[in-house]
Length: 173
Image 1 (cartoon, rainbow, N blue to C red):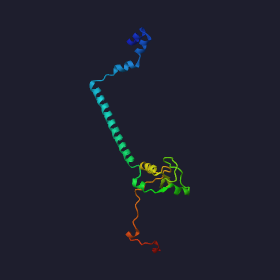
Image 2 (cartoon, rainbow, N blue to C red):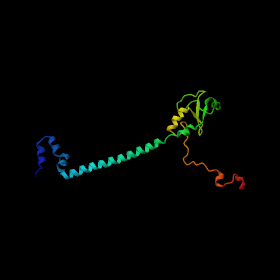
Image 3 (spheres, helix red, strand yellow):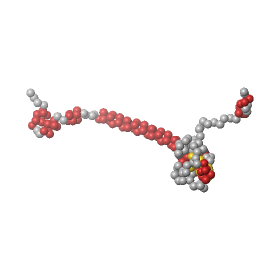
Image 4 (cartoon, rainbow, N blue to C red):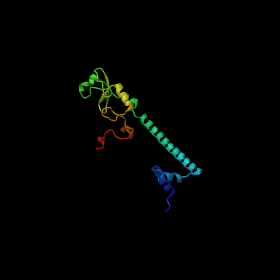
C-alpha cells in the first residue's frame, strides 16, 4: 500500500510537519486562483456597491436634516401670541392663594412688586422674561404641558346677520 507523499514526509519529520501536512488551510489557498478579469469585476462590483450605499446614506441623512430643521423652525409660539398673554402684579393676585409662590422656570420666589405673566389655559404664572424664553422654544406650559398653540383650523364663525339668519332662535319656536 502506497502512502500519500505528504503523509510519508510527515512521518519522517517532527509533529509540526504532521500538523502542516493535514492543515485544512493548506489546501484551500492552493486551489483558489483568480484570473485578472475576474479580480477586476469583483473590485468594480465592490466599489459600485460602496458608492450606492454611500449615496443612499447621504440622501437619508439629508432628508433627516431637512425634517429636523422644519420641526425646529416651528417649535415655539409666535411672539404676538406671547405678548398677548396677560400680566399682573404679584401683590394683587397672591391674595387668591391659587398661584404658586415661585417661578417654575427659574425657581426664584415671586416678590410683591414683580410683574408676572399668566397663562390663561392653565392659570400658571411666571416671570415675563422666563416664560417668553420658554415659549419661544416650546408651545406648552412648563408646569402642566398644556398646549398653548392656537388650533390652525379654528375659524371664527361669521356673524348671523351676514348669512340671513334671524337674531333670535326663539323666533323659530
